Image (cartoon, rainbow, N blue to C red; front, top):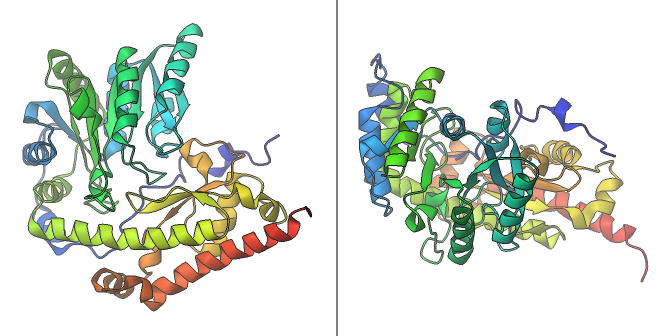
Length: 415
């Protein structure tokens, strides 16, 4: 029996946002936004032309040719996701775990969402055999699976799916006639881009896959919502694109002109944007590696983080110590670690994982400082892990997990 009822604990209203940058705002972005602040912005929803042109260039530089009439923009990926789901209809499949906002978007439309297990080596992409079995079971029970959503560079697990896994999963989905949405928000935040091969599903099946990028991941602050989507350049893709624009218009989901200007500036990738992105990625990668080391040294489980600003930890091996602290599920783990660490630590149930599993996402942004001065120091330091405020945060993380390890060892039965 569940000890915690997550429905009473704000699963949507208090759900975790995208992991923040934790860094000073880039001056070029703020100047561009300020310059556009007096524009009234009466253009049609999803058709902010400068932003769409910039999005086309962004996608093309990643091997995904696009034209303005195959691209849409919206105030954040959730709005695009709602529009695509509404336009396609049917049931939706997602990996377990998955970004916190995917499932609520589907359920808000009255659609069924089915979680599919991921392979051992990564998150974000369903195991192809589990996907096939889930699709067949849904159909046998009278369901109508139409859409698979996946993320090659994943939130929450911070992993990058190997190309062979992507190939097998995409082929399985296409064989079952599913549409695919590839959430590529974190593709530009791979920690070791020269050592990691990231394959977009759209490179495999460009005629069947919609690519979505939320700019609040790599480029913009979370409070400046903007996202872009690339649709297949086919007759079916054009029809779906038109339906999505209709839904966005009905929702009033247009990007505010100042934010659209900043988003277009970022997607054009001038030198200040690319340099900041590279510096930020390197910084977050160092912190993520140090946090991962502290977590696994204490006996918890976590895949090495490969992208983004977070890691996903499984504290199952420390369950006996957590039980002694009345922590028996992921909501209680969230409450416990948030209080002990002084930073958000959303439990795995936020991401579609089992409530009984003791899993948590830890973001690296809070380790970079609590003041503008500390965050600036983190950004410019050659040895950010040696900064006092970063050391304090990492030492606290290590201390909390080491205490759990020591208590778990005391509770182990004699052999």
